[in-house]
Image 1 (cartoon, rainbow, N blue to C red):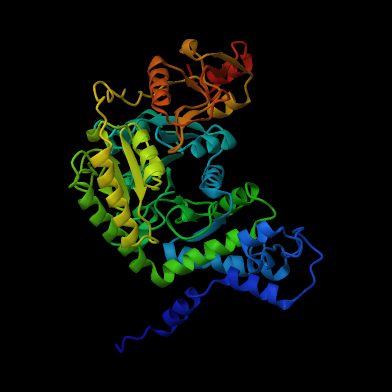
Image 2: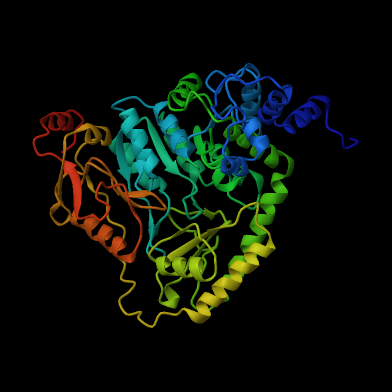
Length: 513
């Protein structure tokens, strides 16, 4: 071999190294056609000065859609189709669908494109709120499974094969298993084992891989879900790679997927006037990874390792690494997620986040009762990670809390609540407010969560228990942001009205007690 690629591979390599959507947009803008079409700013002609500065004149000239040569997201035949094909090739998928309403929309399409009303689906309790939204839209009936809980960190890990097997034995009619892989904190688990298990029982494996679009580009990181046997995967390209916020990809592979129905679901849930800048950013993010992904993601891994090692030399701080996640429900770690436990300083994660933001101009990704989480992406360099390490050293040196006693008697994550009805039935049922203190025993009609990470503590349809109420109140008092309930102060909760007789009939129909 002379080191050159064979003919077909050379053509594929050349094809992969261009951005068809971005190129089509530029060609249209340069063609000079006078615009008597949307959008109203007419390629920037009428744009306010603030908008021109924000988007740039060139961006506004190209901010058009639905022209013949710019293709149609809902029926792609040209540049969008080619861009999606290139993304599928890059990720090893059979099909890729560009999503312009976030991974929330991708997850909704994943569930609507693979489930039917009344279908049973296994859902881990640490699923994002978007999964609950997808259940409401699809009408699928969730059977929640409790993930393993790490008591030292106070966070949920993954599901064990034993827990999934028990769920299958109890509900052999189930159509699919939904998983979160990796978790928000970067923890992975034995996905290939779970894939074989559910496939052996004729079920689909649907994965929320919002935080894993970069895994494909480094052998130092856990494998991506598609390579472990997942059937459909929703990825947040904007979270970890270089596309614009609100852009994601839905990837599908294998004989179990109904590709046309999945396309129809994605089309149903997306705008008929998609923003071409968002689509182009997905195309360009894919191009960037095709050109230089291994080097860029590899650099992020090395920087994260160096940062973690430096953090673990600071008295009072601890950042767990891959060696820590070798127990049931955890088998690996995306090392670019750097979780720092700050309880050794006598601080809560919420307090540490506020100090870092306002004293050192460092903004973390999230904080919880015990931890702050930092994302090291392909964009970071040693300059950024060195500054972060220095800020953490200063935090430890100057911000110990003297009032430590009793501050970290954090209640454990509550057990699975009982099921009162399906999320869909709870969404459409008649509701009424009750005081938070007296809500136990009622059926929740709204979600209650803390954001980020956006994992519901109560879901519509849950039978509210005292453990959940206690946990919610504790987290609220720590200062975490409450999201979901109509009354964000949590003086009241929305519950199903007691005379919702049609819901009671549906409860019996679907076997709820």
